[in-house]
Length: 180
Length: 351
Image 1 (cartoon, rainbow over the protein chains, first blue to last red):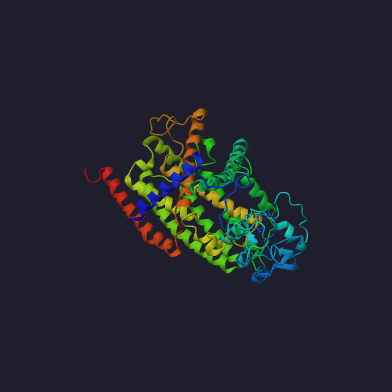
Image 2: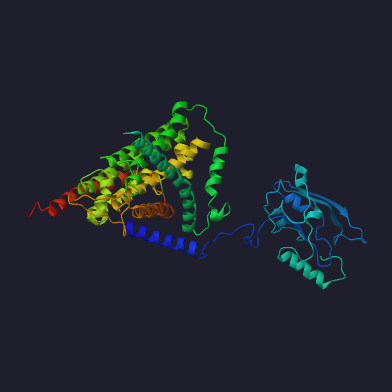
């Protein structure tokens, strides 16, 4: 019999919610696509390849990310940096960097493995739909994202202590082409 | 019966059946929006203004689905079960007095309440046959549980109604409403009638397999229970019959306990013999009666959804215990107390 007052109280609560939702704006619905929920700081979305402030790519082609990937989704081909036309500070850079988005499970192990903070899982979850991306989505091979598709401008990466430390180093030595 | 009145009856049948079927998309929309409101969310709002075309979209989708018959299914029973589900529900619409005048109902039998209760008993067959003929152990379990639940709660329903019948002395729904028009709504006439109403409402919700008594069709428990193997139109029929049953229970609750079509503004004179003189030419008053009836029915349907959104599901053993060990004894005690109340009221102990 103690159940009855509890039920009545519960029903009062739900009725309050119902009135608040229909006649007020208590509703917590996010009407996608007009509104989007803000993503958490550590959200694991589409990969991005970061750069330093001076424009050099952070990726040094070490393949630690490819080794860490549980789904074997990353393909890295390293090449030696030409000192006149540097791509990355350091001896090598990633000539080919490809991630197969169909294999990727978005676990973030590559981001954890990266020693320079180059590859990160960003906030973009609209892989197919991103504006400005001209792409065919016909074949399995079309889902392999290349380095160009993932490179971002300097300063656009996710905040991350390692990247911040490396950027600090570079600021302290602006003329130095190596940061470690 | 001559040709004109026969045609007139056919017209009433078609109209009432159409109204009953029209209730279903309205209820589907109402359910989704109301339950969403209780859950602090919006519900369908894209498909039409306020999402009102959502039931239409659902219906079109259901029609276009592939109609599958499982391999080992007993074909005859498999096809029969949905029919056996919708027919009693629709038939029960025939005796409900939506308004005071003869044209607001299809017919009135001397025993129309018994007729409605009997039809709800027949709908147990549909559930059992659906579970059995699907050739699927989960459907079978769901069907058996559901039919056991329905039988148990029918008992409570019938017994609670008996307490009311001791007061009204008639089984005719038309006369029950007319009495309430004369003497006030039944629920206020005696405290035992209030208890009867509570028991009736709980049993009605259990009969229609609605929350919190919806274990048999809970997705996480038994896939979809007895209608797991049904797709497309046959599933649509089960779906519709659930909503029509809800309407029947709500309509009976308003008719038996809350005065049906009576309300402020609807008044008919009482003649010398104590009978109500209903003038069928007073159309606005009759329409007002129908409006009152609909308001009350929709309040009970809202109550259905309110309960669904608020209460957690009863476990099957809790459900059966509650039906047999609580509601049946309460109804029996209620009948006993009603007897004493009537005896005192009619002066058996004083004169």
